[in-house]
Image 1 (cartoon, each protein chain N blue to C red):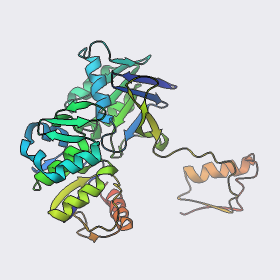
Image 2 (cartoon, rainbow over the protein chains, first blue to last red):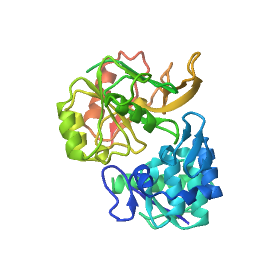
Image 3 (cartoon, helix red, strand yellow):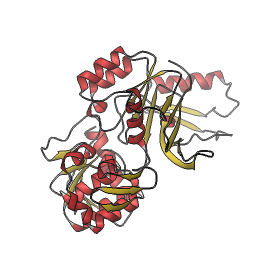
Image 4 (tube, helix red, strand yellow):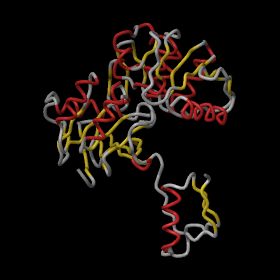
Length: 154
Length: 198
């Protein structure tokens, strides 16, 4: 299941497994075999509009042939969530176009992400909110939980 | 610094045009829309690494802040009349010490972040996303421009208000009381009752 830690403002996640900058973490830790995975290829195609040629080359319509280090911060965050599920990834590195993939990864395995903005998750979904312990199923509940974090913890 | 500032960032493949209207501009939006690439191009250009073919055109000095909070704050304190860019990957962007330095600075700022910067005052109208609008004129450059996340709405007619309720008797109440007494609002803001919650 997907679990979310809502986190606002200057407060930080105090957990050694927290990845604040997925971009930087990816640069030093990604593994070549990750790019053989069909879900990774699909996420790269959908979010970055790019094609995985190999673990060393990605075909981007804007940038040309690029190394995996030059993928978007959002798709790097998704790959880390999927391939390193014990890490708590900063999902604010992901735009709304990553929301469906975060839900998809959460369906396949247990992951916990940190989120600092109102990402537009499309219903139906099941998300566990770590701050309150509630499990939510609608975007209205999502916004309510998010606002309560701002009011009481922000 | 005051007024509009235009920044054009151009490479062989990419072109960005930014129009900064206030001291703080926030850029957010979908992944892969070119936000981080924009900052990287400016940083590479300012470092003198890009060579011919890459330009950052602005009638003010530009700077990219990165690294640890202490260095970023110290550098910011030295910058004058500068457009300062900061990417979301910089942890200091969310720190109190950096917010204080921004408030004390006369520079313009462009922050790339989806999270709200609660310690800084900025307008919702200055939150933008980047949109790829195809190729620029007859070139091979992909053209990216800024668009408001919360577009300004032109209100042609303010609905007549019957009651205004303010949170307390301070600023909000006093402002509306003064406006109502002036009576020069064209009849649109003359409520029959003005209350404060307290």
